[in-house]
Image (cartoon, rainbow, N blue to C red):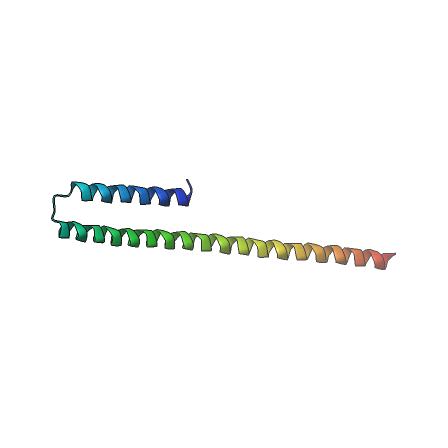
Length: 94
């Protein structure tokens, strides 16, 4: 399952939970507003944490791809140098 779908599902679940909580809450309006505010703050904190985890994961993947690309480029240079050396060796022999 993709990260985007997980985040969307989490947001939908939290929104439904908050809505049901407000509708079924027997508290005064001021108490309900405080709870809504707290739930909103909690949601922001949770989504911020999830976003930071996502960014960190993407950075790790990017660094791995970059490292792999550098290794492949170095290997390609070595192979090209070997071919050049072989061609030069063949020229000298003829």
